[in-house]
Amino acid sequence: LFNLTKLGEYTAKVEMLMTIDEFVIDGYEGPLCTVKEMLEPIFTDFTITPPAEVLEVKPGAKIGVPYGFRYKAPETCDVEIWASLYNYTLGILNRQEQAQTKEMITLEKALTFQIYYGEIGIVVGEVGAGTYGLICELPDYDVEDHIDNCVEVTVPPIPPEYELAYHHEYPRGKTYVGKAEECTATLTIPLPEQLFPNNWVRERIADAFADEVAKEGGEMLDIKIYEDATPTWHTDYRIVATATASPIPWAIIIPLVLAIILVVAFTNLVI
Image 1 (cartoon, one colour):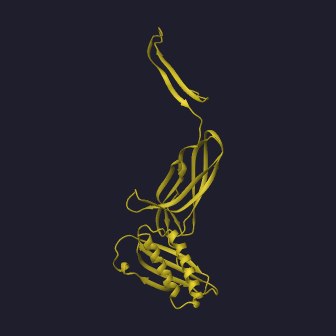
Image 2 (spheres, helix red, strand yellow; image 1 turned 90 degrees about the vertical axis):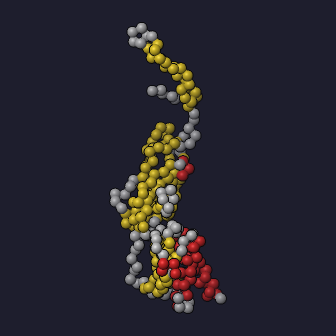
Image 3 (cartoon, one colour; image 1 turned 90 degrees about the horizontal axis):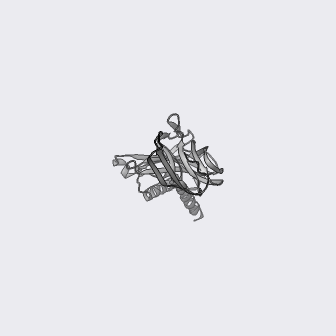
């Protein structure tokens, strides 16, 4: 064991002697190592803590992911950490990450290995019902840990104040046999339903979903739109959309659909 406390190149001379007459029977003399200044953090033993059992979470819930690692750092530094859900599409090499969360953590200066523990929260969002894995990583340092199939996302029931106002089964849905993805989303239009012709807003919602799903390589199979028109100055919609599995990035599509509907609705009123 060598205690190397200074920067520079080290050589070693090692001899094996006979205990009686000190005759050299083996030995080595030459370069040992080079000790350089540590320029960036070093990480090891990065792990996340798996849930005690399969979690049942509703879209919109937040999952806390505990993690820990050992590190050395030449100076106090900020490190980015990512966490997300994921599933597989066409085999284990096709991992699709969803509901990604990014945070910065501060590591204190440590010239010897120290232990760091933390927790990062993943907002499930509208990822669709299904079973997902958890992954946590330090992307700048190629460090990660993951657990397959440990989060079960369930579809919340439709609230009683919502009534089915529109249902459309697409032609593909009548013949499709295979894996499908279902998404439940809530949209609020800051205008009363009575300002528009019958089914006008609902049809625009269905069209926007179909267009955005097609852009992602999927195809709509079925859409149900539930409506709560009891508020005076706005209308709430609960949409249950089913599409062929690509997978579909519902967390991206939902805000796009809402933006499209708002623009179309206000433009129609102005015209």
